[in-house]
Length: 128
Ligand SMILES: [Cu+2]
Image 1 (spheres, rainbow, N blue to C red):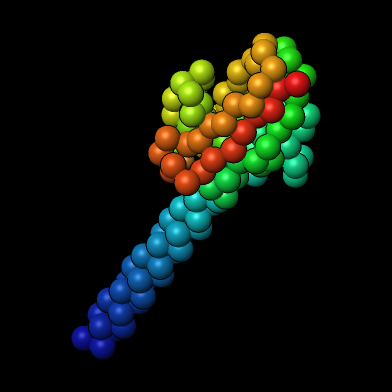
Image 2: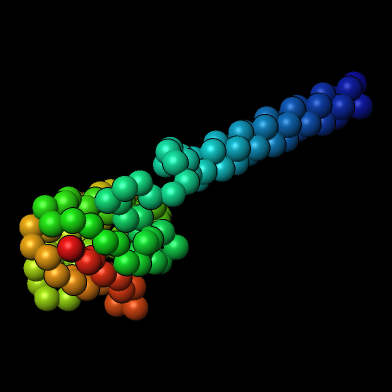
């Protein structure tokens, strides 16, 4: 009798451990899915009049456009960046991951800019 009770409770412990293990592995796989980037970026290079902020750099670092062109920046990084004119002509404010910012350049000239969060990130727009 005692032996039977003992094996029943061992069986119960076994099931409890099995359920505990299953719920842990379920939550693990859920969290790893949650952490996976969505990967909905479209193409693998910036389009015309587009600058990607990617890997802590502006790509392309120098973009040349005609006067009146609107340039769109897209933040491909997981961290926040800004597009900030060195001469205060334009300032995006914070661009979160996957966020965009557009600015139209009506006048010919060279317009250097940087990220105000990571000041080593610099680039320029040349308007012809
Ligand atoms: Cu930045």
